[in-house]
Amino acid sequence: MANLKEVRTRISSVSSTQQITSAMKMVSAAKFRRAQNAIIGMRPYANRMNEISSSIGIDDHIQSPYQVERKPLQITLVVVTSNKGLCGAFNSNVIKLANQRISHYRKITGNGGEITILSIGKKASEFFSKQSGVTVEVMDDLLDGTTFDKVASLADTLMTRFSKKETDLIEVIYNQFKNSLSQTLSCEQFLPVVPQAVTNLNNKKTKQDIHYLYEPSKAQMLQELIPLTLRSSLYRIILDSLAAEHGARMTAMQKATDNATELLKDLRLSYNKARQAAITNEIIEIVSGSEALKG
Image 1 (spheres, rainbow, N blue to C red):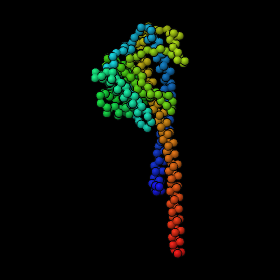
Image 2 (cartoon, rainbow, N blue to C red; image 1 turned 180 degrees about the horizontal axis):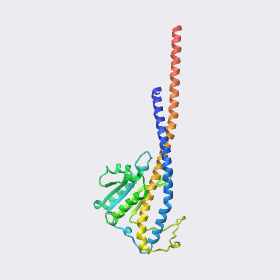
Image 3 (cartoon, rainbow, N blue to C red; image 1 turned 120 degrees about the vertical axis):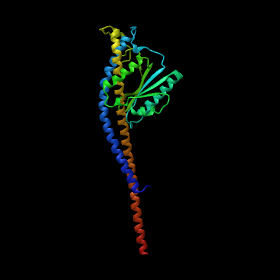
Image 4 (tube, helix red, strand yellow; image 1 turned 45 degrees about the horizontal axis):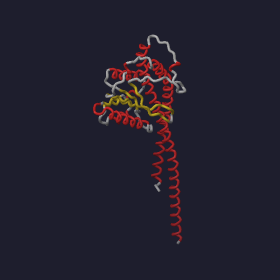
């Protein structure tokens, strides 16, 4: 059994760790509430933008330059992680999926393909900067004080690259916020834009029930709507990732605090046992010495 000094040192260390994890959980909880409110407020707008642009694109024989599909030889993967750790498997899951997509496109394109990683988050940047065979661009500062203007600027850059044929396919890999306890690992095609049928709450196609009046023409509307929809979608993705990150960190710190509490109970029990054993030994030594003097 460990001596009393070792147990006291461990109790002090675990107690300090418990205070830190508890404080980090409260900080993450405050940030999580703000991020949750932001994504909940953004989703209806982004979904409605997708709904309107899709209602124009389907069966209207109208195509935006951002909807042109090409053979994917130059692929850009936008990988969204976090700048900080201590959030469980939040970052490792994204990096794992990104590696799977890299392997997938290497098989498709062979030696003629080029894969670019646009990293948003230091965890992805640190990982992919050590990988060979991919070009890495870092946009970690996008997560510091995220605003729509900053994200829209990145979306415009991606659209420009696509329209100039500098890239043929852009995918975004991130954690989609579900609730404070779970996130959904997602891989969404950003460009080219693929029009999708509009669905209602019962997941039934409702395009034939939607009637919009367009002014100006549908073609002109689509040219304006697609860039705006892409900017909104990327902003929604970043907000999703931020909310998922703070939820994952809050959950991880709560588990760490609970584990520290359980460990402290065990350590205090061990300390009391060791202290009791030490007292018993001292009593035995005193009694034995007393008996020896009597003899």
